Image (cartoon, rainbow, N blue to C red; front, side, top):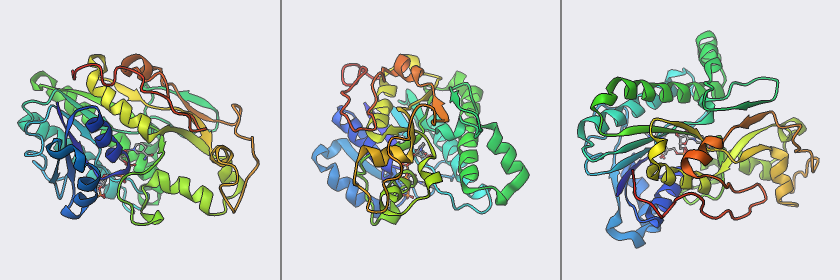
Length: 333
Ligand code: NDP
């Protein structure tokens, strides 16, 4: 099969492209400009005609993906703004929502062969910040950020604006799907990962140009951090496991219509210092303080095991979990 991956030059998407190609899929990647093509062409040169790129300059334009969806069997929609710099919340909400809807519209009108669309959402659309420890599941929606945006507008934090964009982008996708599903040749799956860490294979010109999650990770090793920061955390997934989950999503019939959390487990920043002793000349923090009692946020990832076969995830120590699930052994849905 052939898969369209939007935002193919991003941190996660480059791994998705690589994993798809390794598993025998053909890939059409979309990027915003011709300059973003060179590195991808270089690293995937060995795949010849199985890898192609198209330039889609503005994903918010109606019909932006009309040509890109032609002849593909599935879509991994990854292109979406990830930053904390929006002044007006609409600066991030509008491209997230419109980009998603323009992809779904193009898939509806011109994606004759499309069987499945996978939308990259986030646990940002799931978890509500709270003081008590809690395990969140796919049933949870981050309503709180929408309230905060309604109350605070542009004075809300960058995180709140980003999270609201992810809530509204995902919600728009489900609404579109509900409204049109009788006439669609495809189903929708939404993946909700927490912080994604791991090796970068996309083009990055400098540490400041890293994507948000790996930039935050890099800072822990290259700058002094407060004790409060080192004790703060969330959950995570290794980018290679997330890419694997994205391929498994194309192979699992039962994933259709589902929202699926992809999470390896909780962390605090201290844990990453502990995992690589002597790795920072600025701090060692207080080793060993990342324990079960300090983790506040957890996600129930059992659905990913049940529907995708994601029974193993890489751990903080950097072990090598093998390919679980049916990757490589089954056909696409
Ligand atoms: P990157 O910033 O590396 O990738 C983002 C991609 O989206 C790039 O290809 C970028 O293109 C494109 N993009 C950004 N803004 C726009 C826009 N306005 N119009 C068109 N394309 C745009 O981030 P990640 O790989 O980390 O993120 C990919 C997806 O995964 C996002 O949807 C993000 O919300 C989600 N996610 C990420 C997590 C993480 O921890 N990294 C956690 C959970 C979800 P360009 O290079 O041209 O800017």
